[in-house]
Image (cartoon, rainbow, N blue to C red; front, side):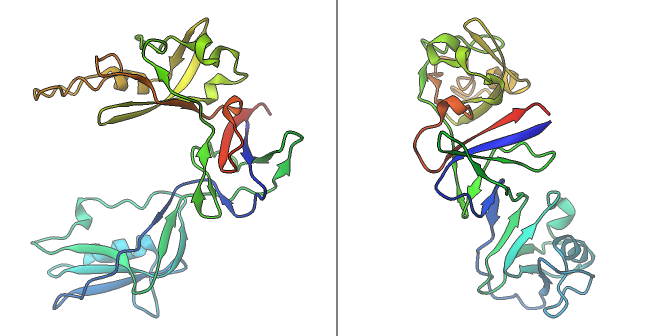
Length: 267
């Protein structure tokens, strides 16, 4: 199965399909006796010095062997392309009152990226741009020239129209979802107080969109907290005011240069 990405844009250069997290904090002065380890995007080995920096994983593993003092891991400049998350656990939090700090090297702006470059853009007759994404990637974020693009989105739907049910909600006809070509690629974004749900549409039957689990189950579940109003944050609570917007359907594309939609296509 292939995926396709549609983008309204004058130029499709320098596009990355994933979130980029920048580490920009300036390191503080090293405490007396602190150990400094260095990491670089092309680093390797276990030395972790300025001239022989380690990889991210190498610096993490080396830091685990250092005990009895504070540890600083300095990341050199550049984009670190990750095939898997950099996992830090309890063993990476320091021992005996000492700390482990990860920060940018002086003047550096390291970026940890799990993104994949999307190339081979072609322009369609309607002015949109289309490209195949790498195998195994289902895009939910798109960066164009380093800036996050906005997924194609619609308008809000009030609770009187999009009323929550056990498996989804009403409103497929009023919102137009019933007429979308591929509604199962779209998501509903719902905000109830401090909760923010992004639930994918699993199917549409007449006027009833259903949503993928466990997102919908979680959105209707309480917190089991006893404080005042803790459990009024579910989609079936009195504080539910409707859907903030639906997103990721080609029918929702507008004229904004930064909006995009993704869809699956059959092989």
